[in-house]
Amino acid sequence: MTMTETLAPAMTSGAAPTSGDQLRNDWTRAEIAELYALPFTELVFRAAEVHRAHQAAGEVQLATLLSIKTGGCPEDCGYCSQSVKADAGVTATKLMDVREVLQNAARAKDNGSQRFCMGAAWRNPKDRDMPAIVEIVKGVRELGLETCMTLGMLTPPQAEMLADAGLDYYNHNIDTAPERYADVITTRTFEDRLETIDNVRKAGINVCTGGIVGMGETREDRVGFIHALATMPQHPESVPVNALVPVKGTVLGDMLADTPLAKIDDIEFVRTVATARITMPLSMVRLSAGRESMSESTQALCFLAGANSIFTGDKLLTAPNAGDDSDAAMFARLGLKPLAGPEPLRAGCGG
Ligand code: SAM
Ligand code: DTB
Ligand code: SF4
Image 1 (cartoon, rainbow, N blue to C red):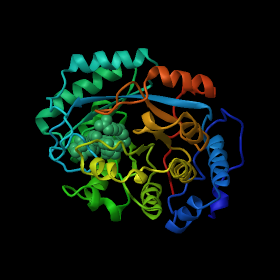
Image 2: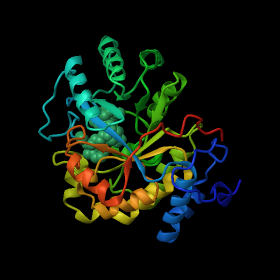
Image 3: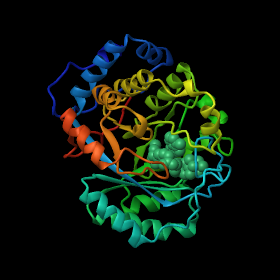
Image 4: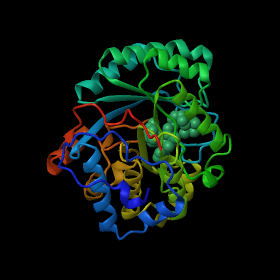
């Protein structure tokens, strides 16, 4: 199938999702590079067409994050304030009590969130942690929220336990292009990441995987990052696109603080969102970390280019987020609505 054949004709906002028969997972790097290099308005126009053909354009999913176990992580991810290698003033905590998690989840629901995403600063959960995690998943589901966890690497039995508990999504980012991975993280490999994603898939849990732009990578690296996602045997149901939050005391935060021009260019960020949308038409593309320092105009361009999910609330895991009031004002100004119905993707990518 050629690239143009994948682009369905524009449909009106709110159009019913298609069956997914136009999905491809045989994208080449050259095709993705070609999309990235389109004139900006052409790229955004095409992404908006794909968006309208497959999703309810104008509706944006609201998800809320909670750090249920903060800091003290043995991994050395160069961007992360929670690594033991970072000196970012993050105090390490134990796993949060189930009741406290449920109080936070109930608040998120009251504030209109559809999904509750819980993160733990672990390389991997220990088997002794699993009963409490299972209890949390069940409790949050009972509140009527979709559940997402991000706990580090999982074994197949751990993934099965989470599936049995009813976990809806597991977040495990590939973060960057395969060939750049070792520049950012040395304590695990890109292949380790894919293995956990595979374990999650096999257990029947929806996959949330994406990464970070603005870590000093090149356009070619960003092409490699999107290529790795769009050629997965089944497209991720959710694709978080984070803009690096440069935290002082982290390797990347300190490095980029000295090179202010390294911050991701807004237009390049929108290009990344648009390319993700075109290559993965049914995935939820989430504007994740970094919105706090992003102008409303840039975010509006991202929504036009097919982003359809955000994290709400004042805090991400440890870093500040845009906050409910400013998001409510932005939604009003842009005429956006919180996503009400189910997401389009359950069919995945048959290739
Ligand atoms: N420990 C688990 C793991 O690494 O899979 C879960 C938590 S981890 C904080 C989740 C994701 O947050 C990372 O994979 C990364 O993409 C993103 N992230 C962390 N710190 C960030 C930062 N400073 N700026 C942007 N994204 C960040
Ligand atoms: C993702 O891709 N972004 C979220 C979520 N998955 C877990 C985390 C962003 C973290 C930003 C930095 C912080 O709060 O420490
Ligand atoms: Fe640990 Fe996750 Fe942070 Fe890496 S990103 S240091 S694995 S909490």
